[in-house]
Image (tube, rainbow, N blue to C red; front, side, top):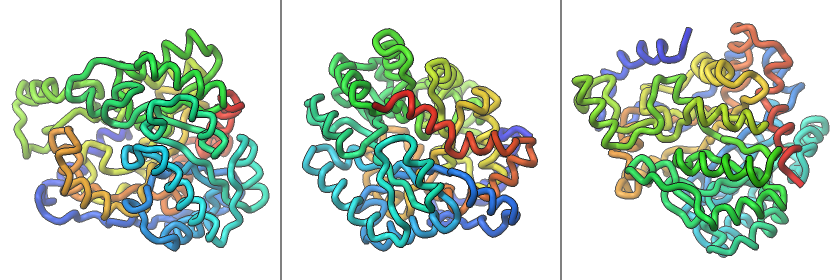
Length: 414
């Protein structure tokens, strides 16, 4: 069954959810692990599974035990490791980046699990083999460079192995998804090209999640010309086609389309904005041609606010399947983008709604109850059961859980 059909049935439930009341979904992701078959739980223990989560100190967590509890649960259930976000617009300077790196390094080392800091792609494989938990850093902005592309080398030395050129807004490197949503049609800058050159030189994978469409096109065109054979990725970007969304619309274009359909705010299928966190088939197929991949996130509030309750393993599996139908199983992974806890994030977004020029899209999603993040340790085992039901082989699932990522990293890291 296609996910968009599932969504239509869910929307009927959403009618009963207040648009302005307290969020009805759990702040912490619902734990589905024990609903999985023993076979799926064992499969997860026996094979590599790589997560991706983004939880800045002070927003996602405030005490080291929050991090260690999270890692210890993941490790106990067979998650081999994760890409962990160190930088965002909340860390816009080099000094703040270094402070964030120190806080995270301290926190993960207090875990009961033995930590393996990732230096080469094979470290993920070794972590699974040795019963360790692999930690790899990533950046979701280049703001911390403060205009100095030569600092990319030090990022690589620090263990950052994946980096976005830009987050949602406008940076020196280019235009992000939110700014594109507001109508900014410009893309990658000359400085952005300089940063890409340094990333390729020092083995940091170019990540295009959160980027505006023109920026992604400029990046892939530039890389195919100047760095042929080097893949790029979308580390946490579902496909808009799975939802029937229009990913490249501006706010004005969405408003016009809603009016033409006769929808008004409050109607079930009215969209406040395009699904700007999602990517088009065109974007996804371009990175496939480059040898890259797309990792699917099941974070509810990125999905146009459609989830009135915690996302189920079946819905999660349908999202993966939607991407595989477009890209093939060799170019799809999972990047949950889990925030560990959403309560601080939701409060921050509501209090600072002026920072999110998305016509109220994200705040509306939070208030509808879209607050879960599909924490991998709480979802993946039953997702495996669902993928088996869909006809996926063990080999297919191993690729999706981590083997595809390791293959892409081997092509882009030095």
